[in-house]
Length: 100
Length: 138
Length: 109
Image 1 (cartoon, chains in turn brown, green, cyan):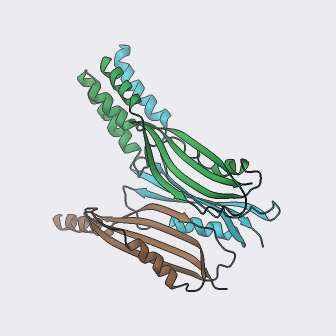
Image 2 (cartoon, chains in turn blue, orange, cyan):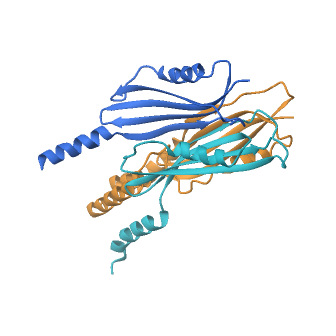
Image 3 (cartoon, chains in turn purple, cyan, green):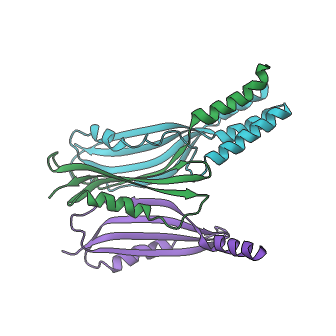
């Protein structure tokens, strides 16, 4: 019984709980053949952090995949996954790259 | 009764404005003069579990206190979930804000759209607001 | 019967049954208002909704957002302008429903 309980607690702890903080969608283009995406994340212990630099990492990831092109129809999700004392903050961004 | 009246007056005097989310879009001043337009929708919000909790603390009768605490716990369990501000009983109040905004702009050219999610709070009672400010290019 | 003794249970039952469940709008995002809206013959209003039911915070993903976006895209082959995204939650007993509402104006080319 105690092994079962330990296994259950471990399963619950490691599965994590995902919640959405914010979402946005920009104007969507006619040409949607080239969908690109980029994610970035960081880890927090007990919710403490001193910076949000991981956001720029997601933006740069998108820009690097669409050099010289126009990036529109950007869907941005900011979500948090909670693992008891540790939190994973994530930015997931996707968009359509159009190169003239 | 005296305590309830006093706390009620204090709550009404301590109204606060709260800002939850703000977004500013591009502003184009090159196409003509700008006329400010605005739409604000709000909905009455109340945190019933907090009301029940405060009432249980103000009640003098022990049985009434226990009953109110039970009501507080049931309400908290019945309305679980993430929230921004106090919960409302209707979530459709912000669905037509864009149509209302366009109705104020005869040319149909809108720029500088600012969207805010805010509230005016009086403790456990508040007005949850979605406001759209913009400029109509004349 | 003592009316005072009945008052509190009656008040509780009335509150619980008539108030209904609560909701919370978290944010409304808008984009694509930087041009003149096309004529009515070329423009079509479209919207898409998606939901995710969560029980006691257990949720694996936030794919309902992409679901709403895909539903919106399927309704339009042209540009989608004046896009607005509303994120809200409807609360319930030990569970809640996260909702996304996406709206836009489809401009046919």
